[in-house]
Image (cartoon, rainbow, N blue to C red; front, side):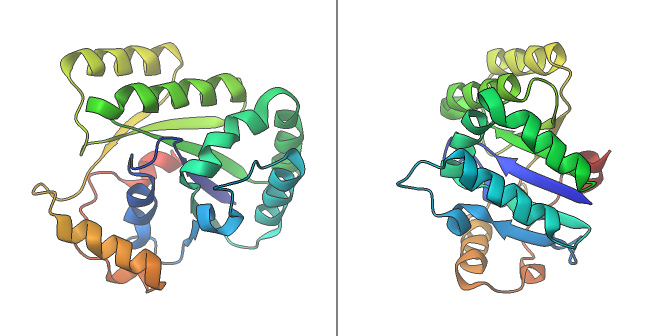
Length: 205
């Protein structure tokens, strides 16, 4: 059973965009907006709440789940893993035969520092025990200096780095279409302006 959590504590970095990009190709995948599901914007998630969440995911009978954790939930995930909850989570995943992959979105420009700080917190809290993939949002291009820092970081921590982006014109209509689908609960296969410069198999391999 495959579970992909799209994470980043910085709002607007592109988590929802990346979570919904595979919808055209993997129409049988379950796409979850967990920011709304957990309702954590104004309250702290305690250890019990997170464990209940992982348990509910564990018993769900579906081969592929792709979840947008949202900024508020993502922000608390490293705090959940450290210091005592990581081993319990690993035991639950192993017992349920679940492969969990955390896909951390990063961007350049004025969001580089915030997104990289979150990535570093996530890496430190999981201590190499949970697979992390770094996904660079091309809508926020890196400066040469930022690109060098990003490359050095992923090499140092042996993390895969993948790019993703919208169509080359980055038209705003595509983003509005995605927002409408998310708000209205429409079928995701109808989101046609998306351009997949990322292959979802890159996340699975």
